[in-house]
Length: 157
Image 1: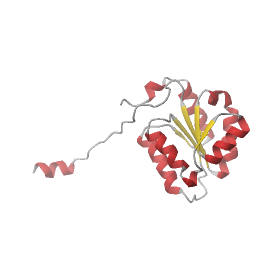
Image 2: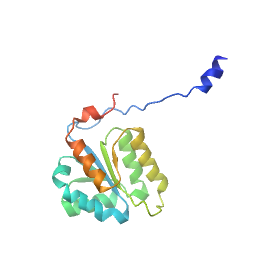
Image 3: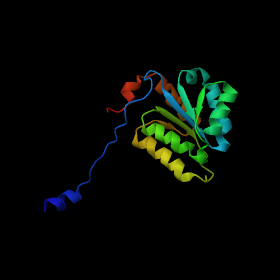
Image 4: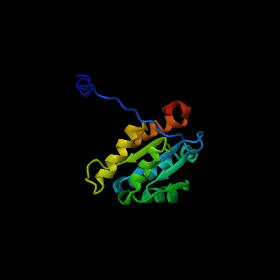
């Protein structure tokens, strides 16, 4: 009877993000954009260059290359999204190495790597990482993350 009652109960699981592997005083921001949104993310980076200069930046391949080339910002580039770059950034999120994700995606076009995109969005939710999918929310979240104590935003380990 005890096993029967236990089967009816739902178990709540929380995810503990591992301790950070980098300096806690400099927020890490991941920048990702679909092809039709590359111009938008470069404009966003250009408009917020002073703030982003105070962050560790990581991006998928072409996105990072364009941001670096057009703004002069230092960006660590992963693989292109369709070749696993989205998953690499997801791994950084799961490892506690990313504080904010700006993912300007094209909601009107199907993407060949939709499962990778869904996994990236899911890992943000699982690890409680702020996720902006348009320039307006990106501006608000970037402002918030760069003006707050990062230790208060991170889950207890």
